[in-house]
Image 1 (cartoon, rainbow, N blue to C red):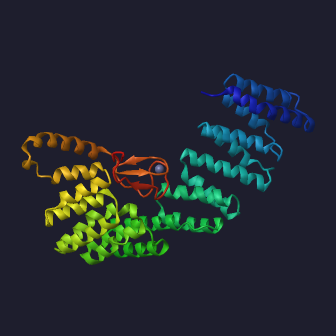
Image 2: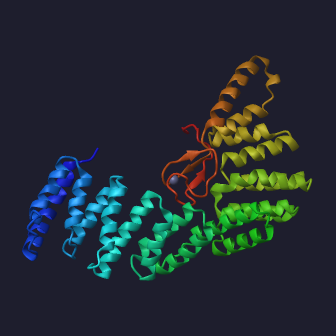
Image 3: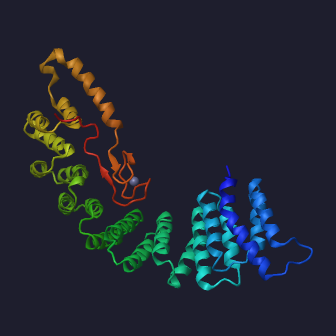
Length: 389
Ligand SMILES: [Zn+2]
């Protein structure tokens, strides 16, 4: 619904000022009503919810100078904020087309016009306006941020990287985490195109940019594993606990795959034991318990000890699976029901959550699909962890 009353309040001072301004400077043609009357007609259109007629009147009478520019820009951005982008576009296009507008003011109108195009999804026009503003050294920070968001939407990681380098210069602040992510995106593109050498080069650059880039280590391990270099893959994976301890759970599956390819069960047992001694994550503890159970048969005792210290549904489910129910026949049926119920709960619980906006899901995203922040989606160790005590 259009809020005619709100707009009327906004436009009344504009109408009065312009009416007076035009009346005092120009003698109106005899066949037309005086400007003040026409402005009042414009306001009348607004009151009657005839927004387009009102805009026609205002644009026709528009004689923009530095005193009135702010009001027109405010009117345009008000329309954009309300989602009426076509109306915002008409106002800003009209301002930009004014021959008498000073370059500084024209650039302000251009910036608003670029915002309209961005909101309307006309990305190529928005991009060219932002680039023009940048070339003139105007709105550096905002234009760069907008250009980066456009390149991210278009998945043009090379341009996003280039613009972020400029942004680093403009802000005087490192953007190494995001730059490394763009390099990982370029590496993934190369993997998809079956160009492993190019991918490896991008990953090397990503790690040089940000040595704590978990994604680069995981991708590097994947590349090395595909090439049959399982020792190299293990080395890359074992960087992750030092890079970010929250992601240790992500290395379990590829680590198992690499040790299995090497037929080195003892090596896997040793590495999982070492990870479990330094990581409290239930995923790591469960992986270690399963390995202990497979090799020494005492994984259930290990998990029981862990559960006594850190209650966790994931670990409890694993304990149920490792427990020999046949040893206590009267408990077999209820334990089986409990196991089924826990399976259902844990298999539908989110595995990842964005710490910025709360978005949650079962797939990993390096850029949150909801708030678009990078590296804000983190693994959830045990979403249904019961409260201790
Ligand atoms: Zn988010």
